[in-house]
Length: 163
Image: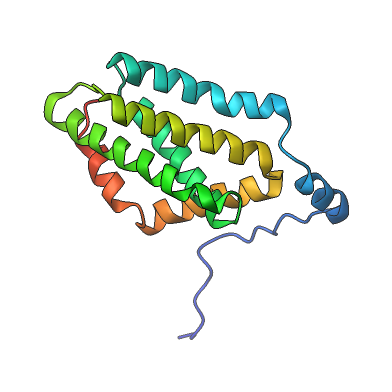
C-alpha cells in the first residue's frame, strides 16, 4: 500500500493582483459620498422602524452590525474617543433585543433612542473619515469576530427574537 493520500480538493490558484500600486492607491482614498449614502440608507430605515416599534430581527441586525463596525473602526484608531457613545448604543440595542424576546415588540425608551441615534451618528462620522482600505479591514475584523464566536452574546439574543 502506498503511504500518500490523494488530495480531496482540486487545486485552485490564488488570485493575483496584477496592479498592486493602483490597488493600494485606491484603498487609500476616502469612501465616496455616494457609497457613504448607500451605507447609511438601510440604517436610517431600520432606525425609523425601531422608532415606530415595528422593527424586526433583520432591522435590529442592521443596526447591530453598524455598531460592531463602529467599534472595529475605533479599534483601528478612527475615532477611538467615540467608544463610550458606541458602547452605550450597543447596550441600548441589547436591551431592545431582550425586550423583543419577551414581548415580541421593539418598543424603545427615550434614553435608548438617544443612545442608539448618537452611536449611529458616531458611525457616520467614522465612515466619513476612514479610507476604503480601513473600512474593508473593519468589515473583515467584524466577520472574523462573528465567525470566531467573539460576538456570541449577540448571537444568543438574535436567536430568540421574532422574525
